[in-house]
Image (cartoon, rainbow, N blue to C red):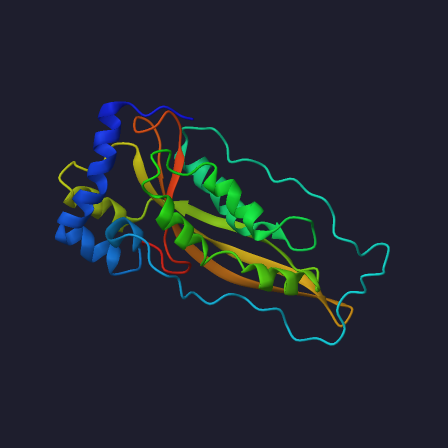
Length: 230
């Protein structure tokens, strides 16, 4: 497990206290749905995508229509926060239901690289409910060979994060940063034996900590989908 020096650990704990105690930071972050860094996890009521109704799912007897085995890449071990955030975005959005993988497998890639101190894990679990389909929805989508990926257009440190850092009076730990990702989610599948596809703009904010907090970048939290810092 990555090491966390005592001074860095103390500063890391102070992050939540500082964000809670600083009124401007609360206004900036809590007001747009970054609930974890302010108030801790809550139940997610984010809508999940549903498969289109169809009376003609993929024929499971088709020899070319069986789910494929697949492996998921781990997040990179790096101290480049922008490169790390891009990898997190791909781990969130690049999936194929017509494999032997499950939503838990995809979530596991992100959990494996989460905050080593464990303090942000409960919130991250709640955050991910707004990004991945439920297990039952995943099974429905698999009947239509649904898969998706993200095309990233822009990754940047939002002005609202810089305002939050300035308002904290230097108490937000060096190495902790937020990046907002803007892009397009592409999804395709089969409906009534015909290929179908759709594209939708998405935006979200990823909170990470790199050196000197940890020996490399780790995932802390995610904003609500389509409710990022700007």
